[in-house]
Image (cartoon, rainbow, N blue to C red; front, side):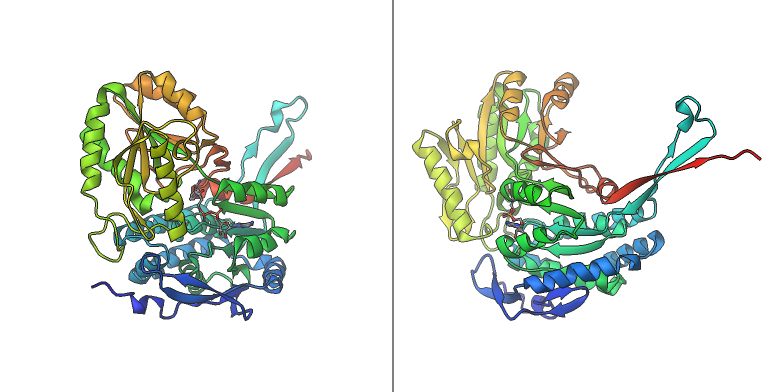
Length: 484
Ligand code: NAD
């Protein structure tokens, strides 16, 4: 029988961290085991006064940020420390996020890549030479740009990638030499707490690191009210992203938001190659990934074959307790979320959709589900489902697919399986998305590449090189040469 990993929570602080010091406000909230529903920790609800102190300490100590060489060393040291504690990170994520062991291990591997790449970036932050003599009468002038840290970066992160989404914000912020204030999802604060301990142990200055816990509508909004914060980097829902954009005013933001991610199977696709990738990209983390395939567009000539293969594959998936090594699909973040997704499936079926597989729910575990015959007017078609549910959409022409994908309010990522370079290039030019992956799914990501969305999926790129660029200011310096 699986245990509740009692050792996993030993030495994980449940307190807030204000300028490197653990504090508590007296008020707490509860974190649960996502599968059993049992309480596993009581976490400090950071007070507004503590948030104020975090911002003041960061502002007063910005000059303590070490040089690029040292920042790189600290990030590499963090890789070493996390690698040594990998099992604890896996166990904590399995408990608080409901990830299967393999999903948690994959998240760690990717987060370590993010740290490594950020460590490289810390050593090569530079501006550029400006060709002043391109303007008349300027041949005796030289100019270049300097990149300097923006100041205080606030990272607000979601529940569905408590390790890597957080590191995609914190590691570039540190690489760029900024102070960081982190506000993780209230569902998954323990992984964030472990990461902060590692960063301090690796040598990051205490005054430049704070961890704020609590409800988004309270602690999150208190952070947005702090005018001394220079930059908000946010991953989460479009609703909250809009609010952050409004409240940030003239301060800079980077927003990674919701999506209805789509993948296309063309008539020439290699299904044997595509199918395992599609399964992973649809049901990984119980479908709670912003790039999870919600719409699978299938060429009419391949519909019968794709439906049968996918149905067989889905029926073989084991869903349930994420602590068991052979579980493929674990619980959703809450039972209410599973009930919400189940109700959207029922609504679709009542409106004429066909349930190809799945649909059943056991508390917070929703069985992997395939629906066909879906159309506009159904929630599963019109809104982000964020659950282990895929809809099959037959198509005759590529133009239809482009119209379908571009008519969603979102534009994060898409994938296409085809050997036809003309079709692939046509899609690359015409789809309104932040990334198109050819012979991969919408969920394909390399942690070094630029990653971000358009339309309601947000703006600004993650990927350490691009995040470091955004988390620095560029200043131009000119010289007029005086001839002897
Ligand atoms: P969420 O928007 O509910 O919460 C995200 C974070 O914002 C949490 O830390 C939360 O406490 C905080 N928050 C909530 N209300 C706030 C407020 N009023 N002010 C300030 N902060 C507030 O999102 P979630 O449910 O944790 O995550 C799921 C969503 O995230 C999905 O829509 C998904 O598509 C999106 N997501 C996007 C990406 C991407 O890269 N584009 C990646 C992962 C998740």
